[in-house]
Image (cartoon, rainbow, N blue to C red; front, side, top):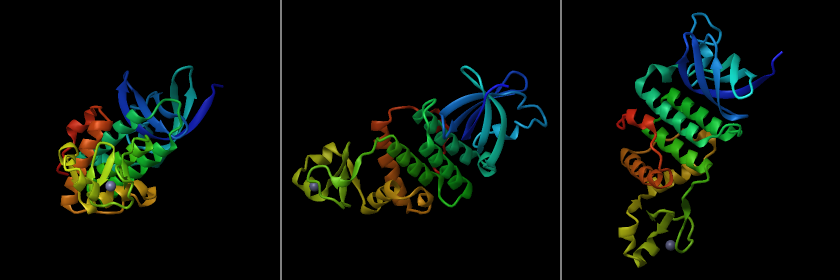
Amino acid sequence: MRETVTLTGIVLIASPIKEYDRRIELLTKERGKISAFAQGARKAGSALSACTIPFTFGEFTFYQGRDSYVLRSGTIRKFFSVIAEDYDNTCYASYFVEMAKHFTEENMEAPDELLLLYITLVAIQNGDMPLRLIRIVYEMRSMMLQGQMVELFECLKCGKTGVLDVYFSSGGVICEDCAAKLPELRGVYPFELSSDAMYTLQFILTTPLEKLYSFLVSDEVLIELERFMKAYLGRFLPYKFQSLDFINENK
Ligand SMILES: [Zn+2]
């Protein structure tokens, strides 16, 4: 008997291999990012067919080889059919998956990353929040999990807390008083965040996961948040995600 292991995870990517097989990559709670072969998964009637579709969440049992996994069986806990059926949903979900892949390692447990991705897919499936806002939340919380957070709760210069009228600098925020004393900051730190945008960012950082995807913002604030995230990720995450090319930024 070959040794087996059962892991909880989400199928990130599935690609065809040989005539009937699939190679899948998963994000798992216990072992982070892994890849596995699913033999015969593309054959009609294969028990592995349904559980090797991207964005499927469940428990997966593998035979463990020396340097690879072979899928033996899977139990689907949630299948995100609404995501697979809609082009824009799929594009956004693919981007979130690519980001999760980028941030996780092999053989390093990733319970927080998995949970964040899972509730994000649920939010897409529910359709209550615009995809653009879901993206902001996911990017922000992913960066937080990476420990790559800018200071959003106190002024970088004077330490005053609870600041809402702020300038965004490369490392955090500057309160209005400090900004007034240092007029050159306007040139160096180009962002002036409205109090609504600032409040939203703080909310995203401090809200428990189960309530994370339960709010809406005005179009103006959404545009402001997008400008903020572009600048922030441009500085702290200088990586080109291929799936971004497919995202329709008006959705
Ligand atoms: Zn200050």
